[in-house]
Length: 205
Image 1 (cartoon, one colour):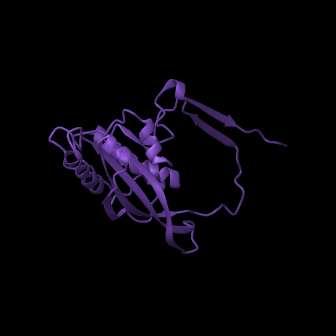
Image 2 (cartoon, rainbow, N blue to C red):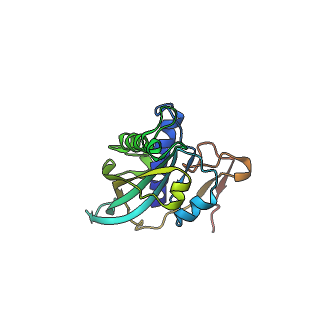
Image 3 (cartoon, one colour):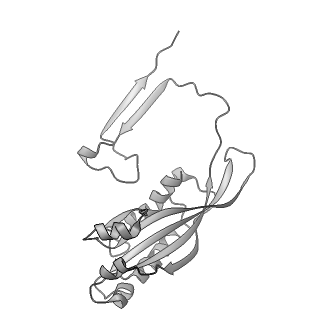
C-alpha cells in the first residue's frame, strides 16, 4: 500500500499534464533515489520538469477494531524540480517558456490537496498538505541549474486486517505486463495487460 501510494501521488501530476491541465508535462518521475546527489551526477541530461515521491513514516494512528484495521497517519514527500540555463532565479520563477519550481510546487499542491488519489487506496480522509519548502541546493544541483521544492503530505492509510478464515481458492486470474512489449508504467496493473491467465482449480478429492 505504501509503494502504491507513492506511485499514486506521482500519477496525479502525470495525468494532469497529459490532460492539458497544467500547460506542461513531467518528463522525469519515480520514487526518490537513495543517493540523490549521485543520481544527479550520473544523469547527465535530466529531463525536467521532474517529480519524485518518498515515504517519510507513520506518525500516529488508531484502530477501531473493524475491517479497516490500523489507520496509519502517514507522511509522504513529493519533490519537484525545474531547470533554467539562464540563472537560478529563472529556475525558481520560470521565464514564460518553461515553468519554474515555484509554479511546479503550487500546481502540485492545488492538485493533491483534498485529493483521495485512487479508489483502490481507500484513503480514510483526503490528502493534507503539511508544508512546502525549497530544497537546499547542492553542488550538483548548481551545476545542472536545478531548483527543487519539497512538499510534505499527510495521508491516513487503512492497513486492513488478515482474513480470519482461509479463502476457498477455486479460480486464479493473473494479468501480465511484459516490459518487452512496452506500456509497463505506473499505475499497475495496466488496464489492458499484455497477457492474462485464467486458472480453474480442480477438486483435490
